Length: 309
Length: 327
Image (cartoon, rainbow over the protein chains, first blue to last red):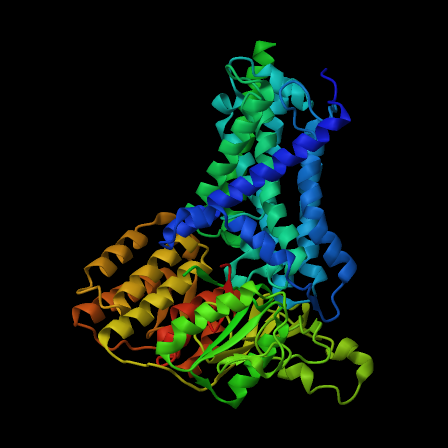
């Protein structure tokens, strides 16, 4: 088993997470600027200007809000992403190399349930509450397929350690023979990062839902946190499905970075093409179509794993 | 320009009022203003011709924004920041989202035990499955993104299901109101764009918006482009699937699917531009409460946006008074 990286690597990993998140946000707003007929360049820099705008805005409170819960939820989104990235092997090593790394990722995506719901609950506003519960309904739709999707690489590699799972894909990435699990996993990433099309909890049709009453730094933390979660989820997909740091010329961490950017970029593009999935539609899709498919995928993987051992 | 629409007062930097609102409308605008975080700018556009210059000044003021704008230095059209600020400005009313807060402000008369922070506790009632549910009262509109200006829908909610609703229409005299085919087509496109924005397709919303701007500038000589856009959109299967099952009883003379309504908006806009429009058999604003009963909050938003041109025929050109600047 690989060892954990020395603690000093926390800094470059966090900077990397921030830079990739900003770039993905820039990509998203550049595409939006293009659609509106504005210059793409102004879109690319929008996340930075939006950061500056929110930093100087006055904090905002609502009547009888549960401030402790509300503030802890808005401050928890970015740490959640950081805690996921810490377990992702960058090449052969991760910041934290743990035998149960995969379980940790799964546990954190469930913490996202609490965080997103508390954002809606703590604010004491109808739209926030509706948004929070819409998120929970949606989470019911994506979480089980996501859990079964995480099972596929674990069975294939016979390990719950992310570095080992990544090393097992020598020559043949899991995405090639577990494509259904990969798609279901990406779907789950969009879900726990509340990004389109999995964002009915923050949709325009409920006035922004869990985001409706957020302003200033609180809003910044949540908006940035959503991108950070998307990037962290994409980073975790690299050792799980995309061969980890494997690739020519570049060092392992370089390939992890490139693959992470590609996955999160593709997820942003997919989100722009698709309308918001309303919870009732999503439950239907998740439980009637995706869940059986993912279970069948796990079965195939199990049979192959048993046969080749 | 680079202005974009704020979804809620919390995210808005600019409150732009177009036209002359009546007293009730004006008091709602004050409430929205009180919910906005500083730095913020409030501007009153009274004539279409001065809009561009005023918006440029808004941008400049926002840029200087950290310096608080107070006192009577402000030019015609602007309201100084401190002016509308209530003493307890910090504690904005979050319980009733945006829009109107009459219910709470006047309600401090008795039984303060039951009213933490001046908000009465929710009353219980049986929901559609016979379960005891809290009843919440939420005014939707008149100041809401992708919502026909002036329409106020006071809904009673069980969870996010509307069990009862009352409608009211606030008056405002518009500015530069023309009534020609291009303007009518633009209103229809506005409604279609709102539905797309609410459905989570900001890219399509932006495209419809550009089409609508070109329509108002007289660049569309016939309905060809509008029809083409509507056709392309109508063929998108995922959109059809997501909107399927959203049915309103009593819309346009029967039960209608939202997807069909969306397609019909483009068709109507095309007909206006081609000069073969027939006045639609549309539901009146009074029919709205019956129409939305039993719908989820999100469904109500989609339907009201889709029916916008019918509900507030004369007001659609001054929708969305609250905008945010990211400029």
